[in-house]
Image (tube, rainbow, N blue to C red):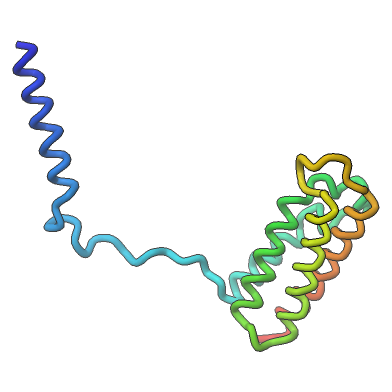
Length: 145
């Protein structure tokens, strides 16, 4: 009895493996690889969201900066996407560079989570710099159609 259960289980496993390898049933059913939308409209939408984040809106950056690492990464990605979508428009590329510079200063100052003893003044300055870049990026994106 146990031997017959093992044989049946082995046959089922073999059938499942063969069915998974068959091109007859899978050919043409999968779509093309999904690529992230790097269009200017996508950057505009994402920028509206990060402009609502407390790392952008907080009046007291000195209290807020310790939780802004993720926000810094998000705005860097948005700036890169916007510049990639419109590489010829300085209204987009220059603010994207400003965002990147602010982000680099944030990282270099050790403001990222888990860093030991960063200088809070440098972290506040870096977040402020990134915020200015984000504001300029929003203005640049709004100015082009």
